[in-house]
Image (tube, rainbow, N blue to C red; front, side):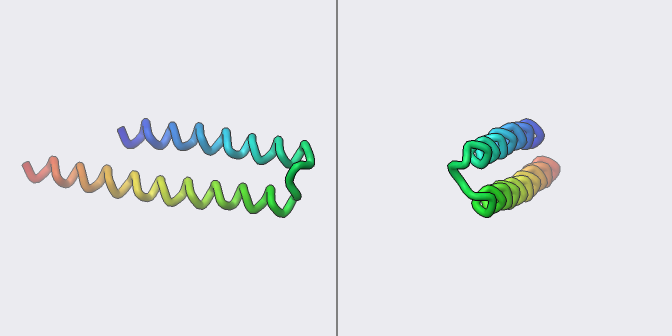
Length: 66
């Protein structure tokens, strides 16, 4: 489940990156905002991947105790 969730996050990340790139190309956002959006998406993805790893490890430890 952890890997499936990470794959979904990668898909959503790609969609978000495409959206911000399209907005920048359409001149609806500035280059600074585009870069800020990209950095924000990367930060969120990194945090979620860490959280997923923690949850998988905790569940694995819990199963091994039984």
